[in-house]
Length: 508
Image (tube, rainbow, N blue to C red; front, side):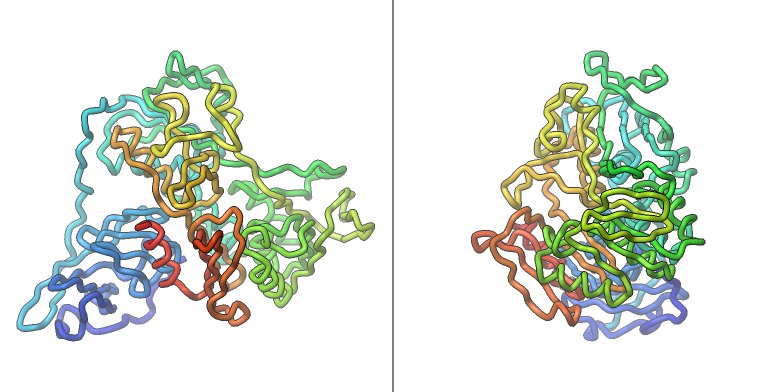
């Protein structure tokens, strides 16, 4: 997360800097008053914008300028240099912009410009819906609702979430918040006042049981019916449940919601030992967070290497070594067979002692509602390039959506936070009739202690991994290739190259 600047960096831009000190395409940080400002030059134009990404505070000076935009090095948010608008998730808030004057071969930064609403785009000939219903309170659902209002949509938005909390920053639940390094007020994607202020009718603990496409209504568990002209399904994924004896005991936890995370934190305050079942991204991020709380952690998983299926053997070995250096104990090529109180019995015959257990053995898309409604489902809800399902007027986004990916030429479904947010934004535009294809390159990040791993693209299968740099030195870029073509890139400490790969894939 962003931290406040204890000391202002760079020159006082109000006093001016030499135009020659900022080469074409260059950028550097100065300050105006008590705020850090980034100068960016493109040809004869100079832009002055906020220096920090509004997502987690990433330094935009280390990012990539592409046309009239700048992209954050950390999690690939994108901002308009002219308006400051957040163009691509995971950022939603705009960055500030300042007026700039070029005089006597010097650059002077003036007053901060008043923030204006994004310009309304042409809606085309389609009829604007009066009632939009969003089923789901996660990344895709929130991003869609926010985008609808940012696009000057003034009709009804009803958001039905079966969670007890408003939309939260779920990646933080397995990272800083779980580790005790982030306060709870960082977790909501927006304060509750955002929904009332923007006339978004958010219903929590709302279980939708069916869709009546004929009447254009969704039906809730209590029998209430909510009408829609356009419907977005953003029901996300749910954790795969453990089915062994003892899996239903109160000390056995999964992690998906804020309530799940709070329950694990409560256990962690008095616990000394924990067992994590699963060596996936969630499982190992949980292990790292618990180690930061000085809890002994055993990770049990059937794989030979953690994360090998996604990141390959070299990165899998590195990740295992990184966790072992931080005290995690692995029991790989093994599974839990039963849980009895503090005893976790393994298939190998060994027994581990644990005050609590966290299960991270995968998730599955929540497609039951779509199946019941007769939508086409194939390991996810099948959508077209506009994220519309087999039923006209019903869209799907996020973990449940299987879409035609132009970069791989395949229909894919991914369970990545940023992808879900960007799909929610695209779905919102298409609900309004803009007919915009979803062409964003998949991106995710994973954090292990102080080591972030960025991943761009999608490689379900590969026949070659080309390694540039040194994985052990935490300075590397891995290209996952099939038939000589790069499908995805994973990187550590190669932020610019990660961004450049994203742009290159977009252009292809």
